[in-house]
Length: 534
Image (cartoon, rainbow, N blue to C red; front, side, top):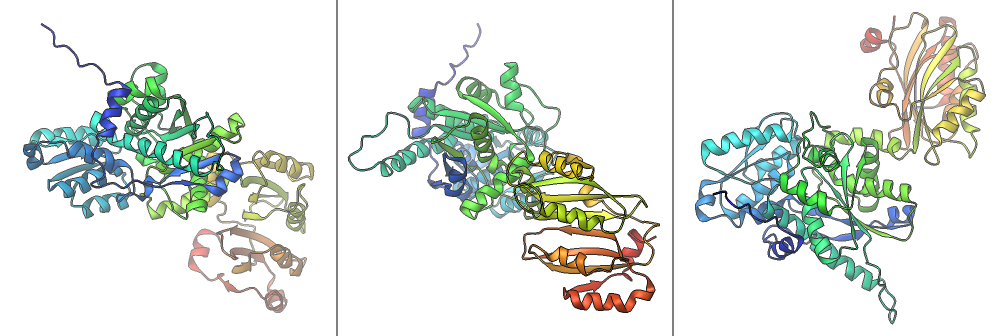
């Protein structure tokens, strides 16, 4: 006699579980806030569900606590175990502390240190194993059997899914309040839903499953749009193939969604209830992190910005206006060291910066002529955000240049303009090698850099500062090295190599005095002599 399989839970079943979920012993009802500046730019209302403000800076404690609060006294006595990239781990650790039970947390070795420290801060016993969630998951099952612990799954469990579904319950209640508040007195409420779509980041699928079940049970007119990184799209590939697909590898920039294999239950739910899936890339996520910061003055982790990146992409693709979208900011456990990468790539992600490789004749005045051309670009002058150059050829100079843009798709027009004026140009705005590595490697030894003096300058970050420098230079002096990168301050730090004959020492000293920019001469610096001087 075969055992009858339990009937899959319907949205109505999940609705009951969500309404009865125990989450508010540890979680708060997070705010739903309009992103005013982003909404104005997109001509649509963008609402931010602030799960980044939960006690563990992530939504994950909802599902973890709802699962653990329903364990038996015997199970709690023995303790629990989980595998997590970090946010679920913090939820389990905090929940275990609240319930007075032991929690063993298996985390990938790639987990940001801020998350490891936070788990230990809540009393969790951290075990680091493997490079991804899937590796940690396999090891946690081994430890579970050895130690008799109860496994708390980060996403593939109906009680965990129901806990996450309370976010949708709050959104629909909160958006109705906002809608009523913004409707003039005496005017009937629109028959159209107060919310057009909810955008949800997907890793293993627990969050999107809870959100989709609640929304489709309560107001199926609202679209649920799942978002994944383009290098970690296990759910999208699985739904497309109509079976779960295990990825060979996953990208780790958005570590909170780096899952190789989605859950059985979450796959079933997402396949049936999610209206649309989207992928976003690293640069667009970095730009979204900046957008969120501009509106909230808070910094979310990459996974927390996926939904906003997708909204921007959705609006651009569908040309929508006047609609209302909610983005769940699902986490804010950002490693501080990662901020420099995010800041570097945010401008490129929004295409507010274009990158080029430009070939300039190695002759007197060509550098100045190129800088003048930048100031005469159609649409008005642009700021130079980066300039890297090292003399290497007697006939041609190859420079790496970053320039501010006035909108998407402008980099090709700028490159064409440079080429038209006899400066052969490659558009590197979308070149991963250039953005990730080459921009930091322009330089090296040069046999042509005789009589070179190296100086670090502090330039005022204003139009004309570089032209003043170039105009005061003697025609016989040559720039043999130039490095500048805008860091967002009101001054720029610039490294310049100048070929100045020994006989011009007095004139050079007068030049520096007239220029009146703070500087330090580094010609005798051993690092310079080792890496840049022949």
